[in-house]
View: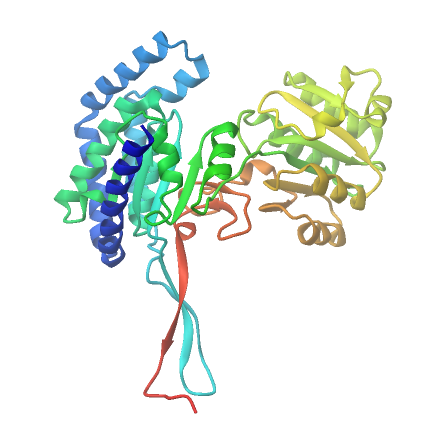
Length: 422
């Protein structure tokens, strides 16, 4: 019942708020010790975690989950070791909390600057992957936050086992156990209660399919860090080097298909030679990619198997070996196309023109904009964040890959020597 869900969330929220206060004061040494101990506990309890995961896998078979979902759900020795290593890697990252920057003197003699501080209580709503329990909790812990974790019902036993390891490590490290809390129920009403717990929760981060993220964005009274689609573009400018254009386009599309930073639409300047255009399309076809092109693309490469692209294609995140290709008049037309159809995730230009590259970087309004690089680099690890909790296409308060710094905010600090205002 909804009233029961509100009561449960009220308890979790009050406990999280108390834990967040303690985590705000925790020093880096204590947080790192908890992360390293959590990794050790996960390794020690690997058999119990796999036994719990076996229950989820059995239920997945009984409920007819598809192969991709079961692959994301599965835990084995290698994946458990990867969870443990991930926590140790987080421990090795610089701690953003307490960092002071932009400190400067004012005419009055005071110094004014910013200090980085935790967000507070972070709600994580996610599906399928039990490793998110460890990853998300670890990032929240290192950034001085408390986490309320609501995983999918299909992974409830696995998530309980992993969260239990983290909570034991917190206690043994002298940090509050309730800095990591799992919503220990599959009742869907608890998702709604979490989204409405604005008196306790400072931000919600959804990780999962589009339908989950749309629901969270529509219903939440709490600020949400999210992205819905990854409709990413590569634009090949007139001055692009042919070899570079081919390599970037093929990598951006075919390195991995089911990821949010894969290219879905290729835009090509009309002055790019026909043999270059056809070479790129042939390379895609050789990789098993279905190519859907505009009329000009099909005319340029009429001997190749290029299907007709529709207006719907330009607005589609395929997450599969399908690519839409459009020949555009110029850079302005490419920027206009991106403005109309992009999801604001990642776009790249391939050009030798400094002016075109600079214009693209300035004028394209996405969370990551690249010059002569594959869209597949839009990733927290590749950006040097060490780890990420997700990607944000919002403008507030963080944009692009969200790492430890993205789980903090800034407050003004003022240092004086007795000044009073006159």
